[in-house]
Image 1 (cartoon, rainbow, N blue to C red):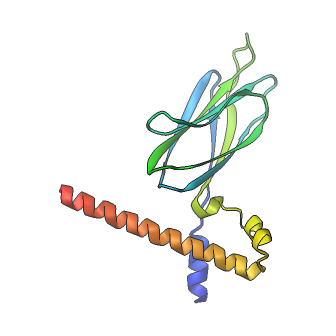
Image 2 (image 1 turned 90 degrees about the horizontal axis):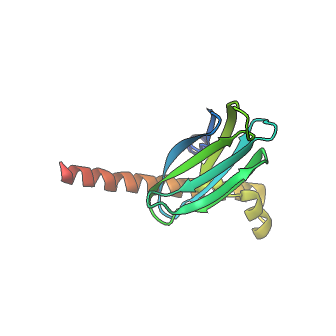
Image 3 (image 1 turned 90 degrees about the vertical axis):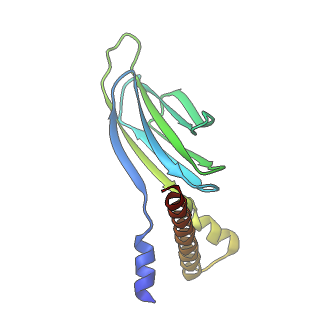
Length: 164
């Protein structure tokens, strides 16, 4: 039982990226998300005097899920729930001050989805759970997530086999 708990605990992953965005340019990343999955993100720009940034999250049909343009803040957060299985695009832009050639800025982006995006501290407070109960809830959610992923992979494998 202990080895199962340790294995499940190590499967929780957070996607964290650091990249540079040149001035007056846009960098986009794509993420494949399953239906009814909560996605949260945190971004942080490196310091830039009078620089602004923009973040835009869209799905493949062009629907905007999050948009924030020309902001001066260095940090921010976003969240959305996927209505259906889709590939979502997160674009980051770097805007230098007017009349300035500009410099590239480093951007840190942390994406969490599924159970990683859940705030178990809030659940514990709302339901008055003990620490062990919270950990069991988290592990139960993780096991459920893994089961759903395997079912999805099985379905995709069957579709590919039928196509072949």
